[in-house]
Length: 603
Image (cartoon, rainbow, N blue to C red):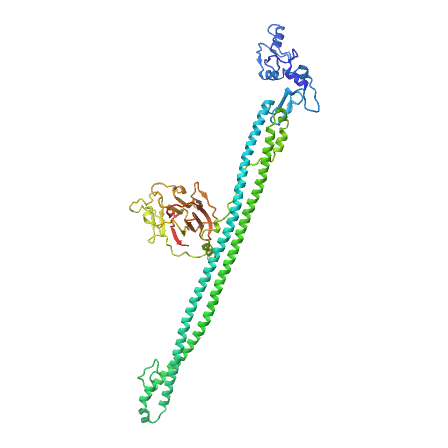
């Protein structure tokens, strides 16, 4: 170290510390006075370097500012201390004024006792500057830890609230699901009771009618048989006078005994007619008795069929309720576990952050700069693992799939091909863009490629956007409708504030009074939020369900084929809102020519 220090600080001519160090073309330095005197003793025109003996014709002395700064820093030390430092097993005490600090390695250096080569390309500076720099860095870290502490505290409060809300929501949803299924069970029981009562009335009416016919036909058969007996007795008489004398009595006795015969016929003909009538009545009675038995048997079978059908529905509802509750429990457990794990992690991180703040507080109050810098690596080691960023992300508890038209969702899962009741929702022609074509019943809308239709302009009519509104608006209550969107590549449906602007180019977004979802680019689906929200739709939509609860501020879109959830708007829907439809523009190549078809189901 002494040799290298001599090479760096001592002039090779006077063997003392440089005074105004200069250089003149080679890499060696000398005192300005020493080299000038050296050259004055040489012959004119001869200028050489005392070190390398290189000759220069007219050398220009250039001050070495960097070397001058180094010399100035160490000029206060005795020369023997600079040239003959003592290295011990402990940190040097004789060279406190020569202490430096390596900001790269975060360690103290002694210019005389340590190897400069080890820190040749590092950021090395004096104690004061290092103290200020490290203080600044630690204060920045302390401020970052303060922000992290605040962020973690807020995150924990949010997580605790989310934990409580999730537990409360799960409890509320269990009650909602139970009530929905209880309502469906009650409906089934009432429907079963009503159907059985109707069956009993139909059965009783049919059996009464059959029994009355049996009684009537039995009476008529007896009368026919009595008439036949009367005729048989009369026809066996051989005495013609007696036969003719008693004919009126016989005919009187036959009155009321003949059914579906001609009373003016001759006796044999009447007898034959009575035989036919007897046969007809006998067959009719057998048929009626069989019908009576079959009706009684059918009624019994229908009771069993109805009971089995409703039992099957009840079993399905019980299984569906069990499945839905199990799914709810899994969602609840998954959400609560995720929240609890985050609470544990953030609580641990908060403790570590607070420990880090305590470590920095203790370090920052140190006033002895050397002691401050000596212990900095220990402090930094203790800080490792104590600094955490707050990146709280969590998935909302999936309440939407347990909300909305729950009873209808249950029925849809039972009857995949269920058709809604005839739509009460219709389109308002006065709002339709001139290129839109509406069906006569105003439930179908398509884009026309022909010239605009000659329609009277109105403040209510869209003049740029190819849109149309529903004829009825909603400001309260619960409403649900479905829109057929099959075979289309572009459409937009939702609700719009009744007072929205209809003129010029319009931005379809909530701030403008529109709450919609859109199909675009052939197979992409988005919610028209600000900015748009991409919807994860597994297969192309054929039918979209729109559930609008004005009072609760819910607008939920479903894939109406399986009632899978698409998107939910949660807003305070103040004012009257009307259904909004846009079939999009069709193209000459045949794309997007299919119309939008709407059906409405009231819940």
